[in-house]
Length: 105
Image 1 (tube, rainbow, N blue to C red):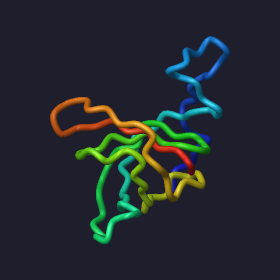
Image 2 (cartoon, rainbow, N blue to C red):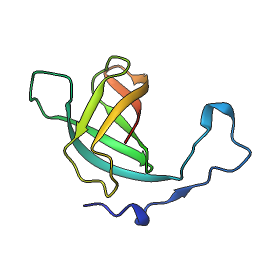
Image 3 (cartoon, one colour):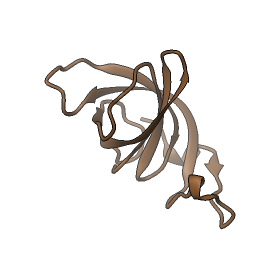
């Protein structure tokens, strides 16, 4: 289990742009995660890399794209209550590498 209190805090002050509004503190991390697609009939366990986390969301680097609104179930314990999350946004960073924001934890 990863201790959320040991991560570097990313300030979220009043100077935030509308692109970076956060309700809660985010913490940097670099942790491999396992997850499954919640709405899929397949039980394939997928891998990703968690790069920041908060009480209500997580940012993952993925090796495949997902459909808008996709839900995942995290199999890894990251020290917060996030077990099931919904895709809020996804950007292709490079060919076959995506950065995705999940919320609803």
